[in-house]
Length: 510
Ligand code: XMP
Image (cartoon, rainbow, N blue to C red; front, side, top):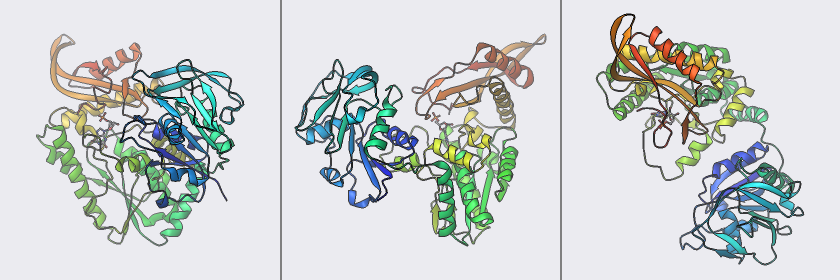
């Protein structure tokens, strides 16, 4: 039997997706499921092991999530992390102490170097702790394998039953040998096969589409973003020109972006129809100042244009979408409160008549989509393109949208992009752009009084857009930006740098 899959059971921890990503970095396929998932509904034929994630609860809460005992009958090794460890200890009759005070952050750890999980790990190292309750008495037949000053049982195992547990978080980068510990579990203990290799996966997805959809016609909405581009390229490699792509230019893209993106699609060989709908969008947006209203107008009209165009290819039965794994996981959870309604260009118009949706990236994380994209020849600039919001520059112009304001954002954004690239910072910064504000400010240009607009430079570092910091741009670069923007772009009187983090701010200004 092949052993090639790790099942990660989620107890609500904040590092749930990170655990899955780390296992995949080891070359082994992993998938995330809720801890109370019906195991009979899963395909467990090639399972090699199970990881129980952390979570915010205490086993003493009546309503806390408990270990499903059927997990123990699957006869594969189990690793419990943080709350996952406590759930195991509780189940097997160990003693857990409740505590108000916890242990957080980097902590020195000592391990028993004979423990299976810690083979090849130094006896002393630094790990990342993040817990309140802790195990104080081991369940019977378990051996303590690690400890810290404040945590008498920081890990335990029963090698015969193949059950392992750690109180700390091996998945986070702050745990010095965390990755090695996960490798010990996934590769040495579970004996998982390394079959999760992007180059092979690309070909596998292409072959599957080829086989399943032979002779069928499909449509794909392209946005210039990495997900839709990689999804379309995979499908194109499988069914060639039976895939018809549609690129709607809503007139809210950056300078020269529409033509650059079209050139890149041509390089890949995609069959794309570009629809210039900019006038329609700008007419609909005339005088509209409210950000959510702008989003709604753009989102709705985008769907109508896409629908109108798609009808022209009436024999297409399937819609290709760039849905990725975090979208799939998120849609199964309670929705977080809506701060901004996100409209993703390329989203499925609900009442469109398609027989089905083809989502070749459903199992992949963003970094995997990028690696796969590179491996199938999607142009580098497209694979590494920074995120760009569906409503485009409309939400980077505060207040109503006019051609003059669009011109100012486009020209200042272009200068920012050039300079960030000159300084070699384009790969370090998550997102960078300029924002037009309707504020006017007095200045002197030549010997004359000027009364021009304030433009904001926004540049942020992040790993997932959930939390961000303002990027620490070199002062010399900031000066250069201000000089160039004021001198080269008419209508700009002052340039300011936004130093707000998220939270409490957001990345975009609207
Ligand atoms: P915020 O501003 O919420 O942005 O911190 C987080 C990420 O989402 C992008 N963003 C959007 N993307 N439609 C999109 O497709 C939208 O309406 C939208 N608003 C924000 C933003 O650029 C950042 O990457």
